[in-house]
Length: 314
Image (cartoon, rainbow, N blue to C red; front, side, top):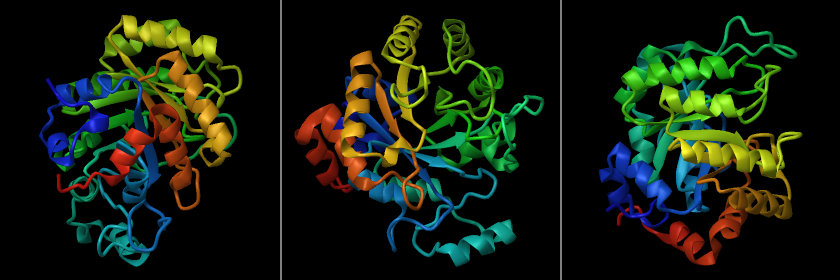
């Protein structure tokens, strides 16, 4: 038996195997919060990482966005300001740090990274955003993530990158051969490609490819993706052994308290296991108070206070 993630201490989390991490998420009964953070911009606070801020307001898992597996930089770590980051980007040989291990020690949380399965031939709506090879999903980035000690990878797409569901499926298969952590996969929005975000057939293909958690846009974030569609996708995923994560990836993470609470409860009613909140607040993290409001909505003050107060030294 493993402790629920929402109740686990930092020392318990550190000892968990991949299977135990997944079991601890499932045992939390739809009350796990994933905070996505941009890690390569000036942070919301002067002397801490966005990950530490999110963890202190109730996030159980941290998901790093724009993280380059070949030149890993997290601004806000001790000694890593904008000046140091620019030096590392200009000369990667100067970068000898492992920010993943540092963040684990500072937050006591599971740390994951986004990798993007870019489809080079996909037609993109609007201007295409080019990204570095260290942010794309590949054999090399999966191996680098392993070496850094990444707990999980989220295969998804930022706006305009040209990520397709077909390419996500291929990347899941590749990741299962190499990466030792667990895999979250799916699209929070179109990522610039005109295709259905999720269908029954794609849920089956994601499961067969080996995904552990299916990412779905949170109800109330993507036009036309309502509670009926979410419940249908969640039910299908559960029948195939997949957990599900709702994602607020449309900048609504900086909306009003009432909007956050409404989105949270709608998706909890649909049966999702994890609630993701995106990075589109000031300085690349959701407003801290909205992480708090999300936490309070899905699990009340008892667990919210516990998670905020629990020392990483336990």
